[in-house]
Figure 1 (spheres, rainbow, N blue to C red):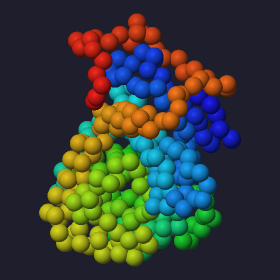
Figure 2 (cartoon, rainbow, N blue to C red):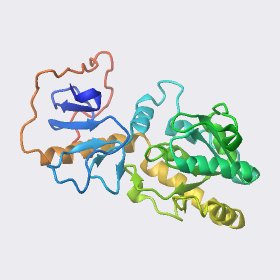
Figure 3 (cartoon, one colour):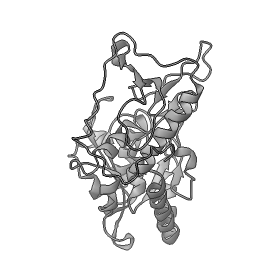
Length: 299
C-alpha cells in the first residue's frame, strides 16, 4: 500500500497468495481516491488515470465502488453496535399506517440546498421536520435556520413516513439505509451517484424532486394524496435494498469489480518501494468450517 500526496490517494496491491477462503482474487493494483469528490474529469485533455472513488458524477470518469460507509457497515455487521443494512431491517419503525406523516431530515450544512430545506421546514413545520446537527460550511444564523439540534438515532427516522434525501458535499451516502427502511424516500435530482444508482428507477423505488427543491412541497403533497402508491414505492425501494445492497451483494460487487479490472491491466502488479504489507489473519484464528474444499471462481 503506497500513500499518495497528502494521503489523498492510496495505491493498493492485492495478491492471490493471500489466504482468501471464498474466492480466488487476481493480482491487481489500483489507486483509491480517499476524498469525497471524484477526481478524473471527463473532458480532461491529460492522460486518463483509472482511479477508484466512492462517488461518481456526470462530469467525471472515476471507477465507482461502494462507499466507505456502506463497506465499513458490511465489515462490521454483527461485530459491534453500528448502523448497517441488517440492523435497519430490524428497526423499520411502526407499520406504514401508524408512521408520522411529517417528512424528516437531519444533517450538517454541507450544501446550500440544505439551508433552503431547513428554512422551508421552519415555514411549514407541520409538513417538514428538518434541522441541522452541525454547522461547518456556512455561517450559522439562528434567526434563519433555528438552533443546532442533537443527533437522533437513525432508526428513529423510520417512525416517519417520508424521508428526504438531499446531497451533502457529494451524494448523500445514507441512501441505502433510507431505502432499506419502510418509508418513502424523496430523492433530490443530482449529478452525483453511487455504485448502484443506475439500477434505481424514479417513481418505482423513490420519488424524485428537483435539485433546487422548487417542487419538493408538491411531491410531498402528491405522496399524501396517493398514500397507497407511496406505500408501494416505499416497499419497492426496500425490496431493492434487500436484493442489491446487503453484505453479500457488496462483497460480490467488489470481487467482480477487481476481477474485471484485473483483465484490463497491461502490466503485472509489483510490490514497490514504500508499500506496506497488510497482514492477514491466520487460519487458526479464523478457521474455515466450510464443507467446500475447492476455491470458487464466482460469487
